[in-house]
Amino acid sequence: MDLLIKGGTVITASESYIADVAVSDGKIAAIGKDLNMPAERVVNAVGMLVLPGALDVHTHMAMPFGGTVSADSYLSGTRAAVCGGVTTIFDYPVQHKGETILGLINSKKEVLEKEACCDYAFHCCITDLNEGAILEEMQQAVEDGITSFKCFMVYKKEGMMVDDGLLATLLLRAKELGAMINVHAENPDLIDLRTAQYLKDGKTSAWYHYMSRPEFVEAEADKRVVHWSTHLDTPVYIVHMADKEGLEACIKAKEEGHELYVETCPQYLEFTCDVYKREDGRNFVCSPPMKGQESLDALWTALSAGFIDTVATDHCPFQSYEKDWGKDDFSKIPNGCAGVENLYPYMLDAANAGKLSFEKVVEVCAANPARIFGCQNKGAIAIGKDADIVLYDREKDFTISVNTMHSDYDHTIWEGKKLHGYPVQTYLRGQLVYDKGDFVGTPGTGAYVKRTPKS
Ligand code: URP
Ligand code: ZN
Ligand code: ZN
Figure 1 (cartoon, helix red, strand yellow):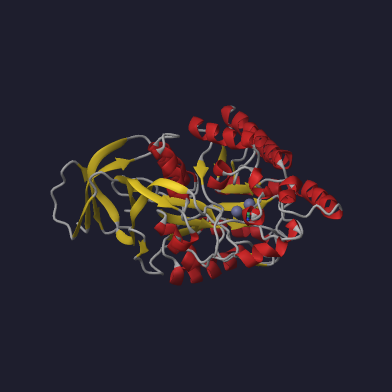
Figure 2: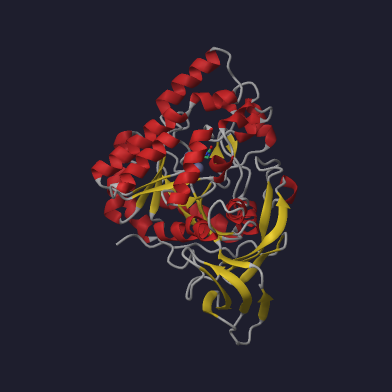
């Protein structure tokens, strides 16, 4: 064996038990009590939790956006990922009008082959059909393992928005191919109308970012997606759910048996829109914005009740000087916040505090993302799976600070957040890549995850 992890508590999505875990050739080879096999490296995990590496199925590394490029490169973003127990990211390359999606994905793969510190997959954002050619190309993309595509219902002036006709076309085409459409749901016209009015009235602070796109603006679009997908009988995955009314529409559709998946993010579980009243409110500007306490509470309730399928980060950091562009005009603040290194520690801290179970955290951060997005070898501590393993110390206290994160940005919305319990080691396919605070991996060792479409 290459690695033997002794005596830890293995957590799966459905149970936890004390066992040894043996790793050979990057795969989990055996799990059992008192495994007696020679191994190159033996790790004493008594008292530790042994978790599958998390899949952060929503990141934007090095993404041109908001007049700049998001602050984490693929190298720094994936380095930060493993230091927080994320062993696979799903990035969102955005197609520019006229561009082919395979060309886009291949250009990203070239960079990641050199830079990736964790494994990676892509959801490709489609903005333009190229006179129908993209519908053909989607088939090749699915064959190449890109089994999900994204539609933005917003970002009209950025040229990223899809209209209802294109959304419906893509929902239907994806279904034909056994693929999924992921949707960013907010109403662009309401946002534009309200933004223009606030700016005209001299209401320019970060608070008006929230006011220009409050609960009902997101809920309208959530309901529209639910309407389209249920009536067209197509699966759909709604990203970064942040509002109660939209969530309720999703829950209803789920209860009626429709194939609809809901993702939320730690920022919507932790912060309310009150952050936009702070002096540094612009640093919290992301879309959709954080909402009121009622929405935050509804997200936690839905999470515990099993109506939220995944928790991912929407990692899209910008530097302070870029956020400052919007000091006197909220519409100039690049949208997005950091989170890839904080996802698993944040959710596990909630489990440690008894807010939800460790099994639930494994379910929404590892098992469900792997299942929903067709990663056969990921998301579980089970024989035959990739040995993506996190050792977690339930007693380690940790205070999040930008100074100890492994990204390239200069501030974080998570600054000062106290966690009880923290990952101490991360293994990527059996290789130690994070050890007690330090990145110990090698850029370029992350591998592309070729996914399987639904049959
Ligand atoms: O504010 C955000 N979320 N920025 C990244 C792009 C997106 O909408 O997911
Ligand atoms: Zn989005
Ligand atoms: Zn996003």
